[in-house]
Length: 373
Image 1 (cartoon, one colour):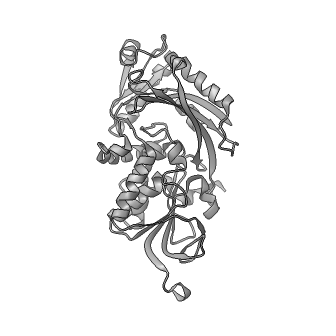
Image 2 (cartoon, helix red, strand yellow):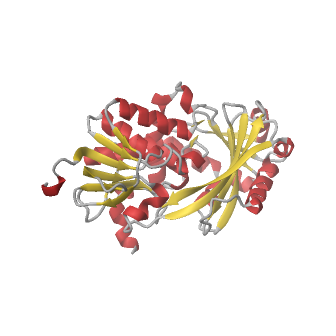
Image 3 (cartoon, rainbow, N blue to C red):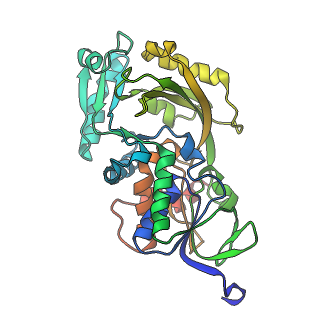
């Protein structure tokens, strides 16, 4: 290794300690790899800290559903861990009109095809489950086994498990990927395969993989236990999540285990400042009030923003980087990174180990971006 003699060597050097990077570190260390994690900021402090933390199967894209479903089964191992605040509240998708209600059987069928149980409910059942909802809604779809978690707590839990198995944490910035590994900001080098899991910052180290940042706002209330019982979303949510509009809002509200209510969701391209936009917050809240008028009476404690990393086609990059034999990537999960973190980690690490993956990895292959050039 020439001048790299004496440099610390690892099987896998993971850049980024959000929930994706820490999930990779947890699984890689469990499989016996010598792992280093590079993270200059707080663990789970970026997109992970700004996430709502829903564990939900989105059925709009077959590859997205496959990855979410695979991951949701892996999340079952983490129930009962206090710091991650796992709460199986279930998801209730709300239909505001007959057209939305008519789409529910097809959604149930797509979910059932991968083993996710869901049920259509009429308006009477809807109000029995959630009495605070606005009158006049048509019905909905209930997915009872879905859950919410506290994402930064999960990232720390995963990192702690990896470190307990011998993984090393370097609280520095990776400034370059070298032919042997990575260079850190203090000019020292680490040798080994490199896995980049830096979300929106991905192009700093891998400019060949395009990534957009999609800003979002969240509001959390004081403690009001019992106002809602399920994670509530409008059935039009996917149109907002997958659309290309410069900005959009959708009804998405969660009961947290603390008794607080977490209110989303907004999506916004073209804003690179983390400052809160009160006009966007007003849009988001007005959307929520249409479905849940009781929110108007509650006190908000905090408003914050975050940035979702969006790949070229909305699916994450999971696998080997083209033309870079020892460089791998796990990034670009947009708003589903919490749900899909555990499955994403296994998909990448199993490929690194030369194993057959549990689900087809091709839809997430970073090499596909060549066709978008």
